[in-house]
Image 1 (tube, rainbow, N blue to C red):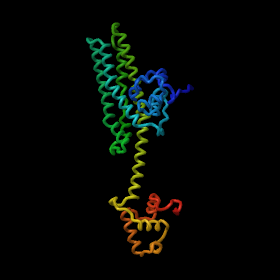
Image 2 (cartoon, rainbow, N blue to C red; image 1 turned 30 degrees about the horizontal axis):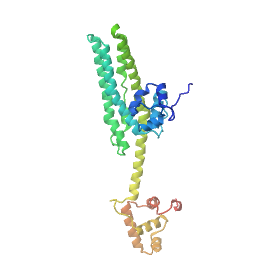
Image 3 (spheres, rainbow, N blue to C red; image 1 turned 60 degrees about the vertical axis):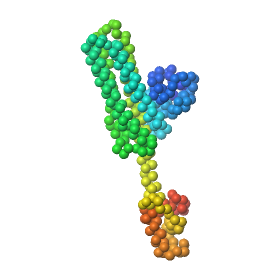
Image 4 (cartoon, rainbow, N blue to C red; image 1 turned 45 degrees about the horizontal axis):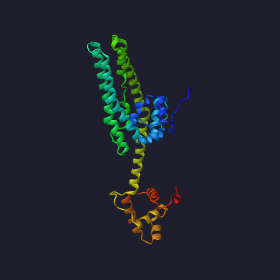
Length: 318
């Protein structure tokens, strides 16, 4: 089986382009400008404020099919988001109009079939725009909210995955119609052949774009969602442990002494004798502690004492 060449940070950027001219389109989407001379991939990425690891992940996936990203926490979601946003801009603002102009120049304006093909292309372009605008309106803002730690409660990346349909069917039909049914015109044949070549390239670009979303972007967003969920759980537990009902009342030094006594397994009388106070005072302190912390059990007070450094966990009997 042929071993795939995986490009690394120390490789020359020009070598990647020489091996794979299709990367020229990706460079612009990453915000990498031409004119990088003999710089390495890492030097070029750092010069353009692009995460090197994420750039290489996309490159090695689109060129070599390398796709072991299921648990890859090194991927930078912000870099992926910028890459996909720029890819949309490139395709909608440049590539779709470019192919349309090529088709117009390749087809006989007086030919009815030619006009129908143009109509078919416009329908395809509208479908692509609808698809990408949906992502820009829903998925991309959601990802940005995740990065800011404030995810929307009514959306998830799984919602996106369920509605992420293929958009290349019409493009396949378009090129087949041109090849099979368009009458030969010697004067326009070369132009039409060149246009078909560009359509084939665009079909491949769209396929890889969708796979980057499905195989790299979506798993990375799932990991980000899970991390935020874990953070929220931890934050909620911390709030329960550290705060009372109003979140403003603090525990006094004497109340801390009572908590330590409870954690050490003392009864109220033992705590009273140890602190030289009355049992009723101990009971009052415990009521105030429960009210302030909303913790009523010795186990809960033990957790509070450990996380606040009142006792060492090694001294606690579990």
